[in-house]
Length: 85
Image 1 (cartoon, rainbow, N blue to C red):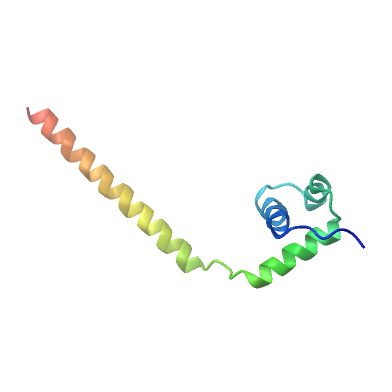
Image 2: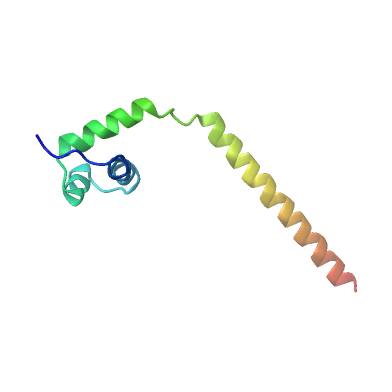
């Protein structure tokens, strides 16, 4: 049986496996753990973490677009005032 890894180590390995775009075998090798161990950690973490809903993603995007729209309107008003004077 191998050594027990810290929770931080495990979380970082799972994060890299899910976000880096690297093959899981490569991530496992980079972290010095077995491929099956990394796969098990990813499966377990996916079960415990709630899936991000499409609705929340859309809400975040709408909020970002509204903020950008507000900024662009403010910039347009400044430019209008600058051309008048």
